[in-house]
Each structure stands twice: as structure tokens, then as C-alpha cells.
Length: 73
Image 1 (cartoon, rainbow, N blue to C red):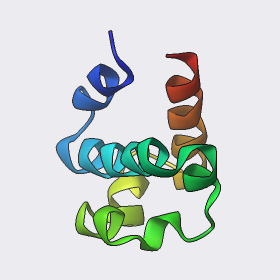
Image 2: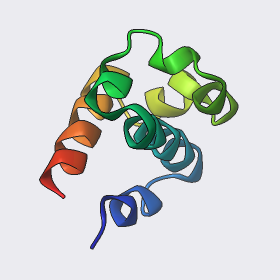
Image 3: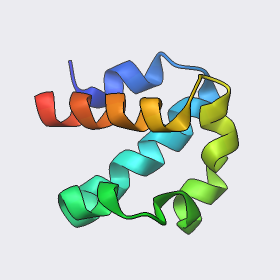
Image 4: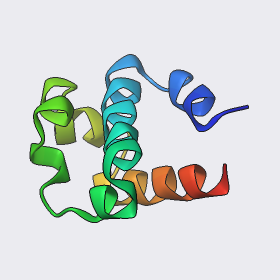
């Protein structure tokens, strides 16, 4: 199971937003995820950004869980 498999099981908008966040990691490594402007990147904005994540809970918590899943893979 890849980290993306879990993302696919989430609500569509949240899944797309988290995949956009994960792609920032793929491009820039840990620094990409730690960027304070990560939610402002065009790819994340196009995916619904913070609003998509808020549907699942606190965006900071969701981002933290996503980081944990990426680093566990």
C-alpha cells in the first residue's frame, strides 16, 4: 500500500488537496512541506486548498498526519 492509497479513500476534494500537498514533498522534500506558503501554491489552491482540508478537520492536524504517512512509507 502506498501513501497515495490512503488519500484515495478520503473525500474527493480532500484527497486531491492532500495529493497536491504530497507532490510538494516530491518536488522539494521536507522543505516543501515545511514551507509556510504551501497552501498558497497554485497546485494546492487549484485542489481546493485549506477549504478542502477543513471539511476533514483542522488543516494543521491533517497536514501533520499526511507528513507522518509520507515518512512512514
